[in-house]
Amino acid sequence: MSLPWTALPAAWTPPAPPPDIPHGDMPGDSVHISDIHVQKAGVIFPELWRLLPGIAAQNPAGRAVISICGGSGVGKSETASLLSHYLRQAGVGSYTLSGDNYPRRIPLYNDAERLRIFRGGGMKGLAQSGGYTVERGEAIRALQAEGRDADPAAAADCPWLAVYQREGRAALAGYLGSPAEIDFDELNGIIAQFKNGAETLLLKRMGRDDTALWYEPVPFANVQVLVIEWTHGNSDHLHGVDIPVLLNSTPSETLAYRKARHRDGGTDSPFTTMVLALEQKLLEMQAEKARLILSKTGERLSYREYRRLMAEE
Image (cartoon, rainbow, N blue to C red; front, top):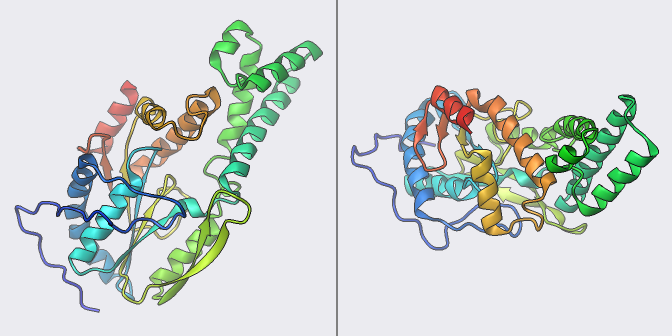
């Protein structure tokens, strides 16, 4: 298919999005486009338009894969939806896929698994260090019942608890964003099928309860660009992404956003704060591979500027 890879006008500005703009395929998901999302997409799109012709030319089917990654609340869904919209407006077929359909467990069970791994790792680590006593075990169970066993303030009152928290955190870090948590093989297979020119893909849908799991055949005959919006869109375990884009936010910015939206009930719990910090570390470790990095406020950052910003946090 011949694609319109012509130069953008020098004064190109992002077109206004329609109120019913198509978005990612996560069941129940919705997007709320604001000026900052339009600003971010407006910075990203001209660079994508510059890179895509060469990438598509190297693929026998003329296809390319973009990922929009970043922490919670940074605007992945909204920005990805806008980029897909701009591509379609320019005559290039695009589909937005949500990576959140590909964990091994529904959110309720995955949250429970994360907590189980943290607490199991913490108790085991405390025991192996020689610091476990019956009394300390009872104290930990009381803190668990209160949801405070991951709270650094609790360790300030009970210094031995620092071992439990350190070892639990290490165990949790080995799980988050790993193939144990996420079915990267399935998503990698979808990317490979897309790049091989598949005209229909069977895509997974995952909701928030036991019965909300199904597959949907999606036509791809007229799609040239797959846009993946996902926290782990720049992971070493994800293969076939041509242009990873990192939307950055510092841990404090991420937590402030989640508090503002009252997301996931225990938004400001010590355990949630720990999870966000560990996911942020994963994003930092992978950031050097990103073709584009944008700040929370929509400015393009070099990798050096990104490192300096994160060091100041």
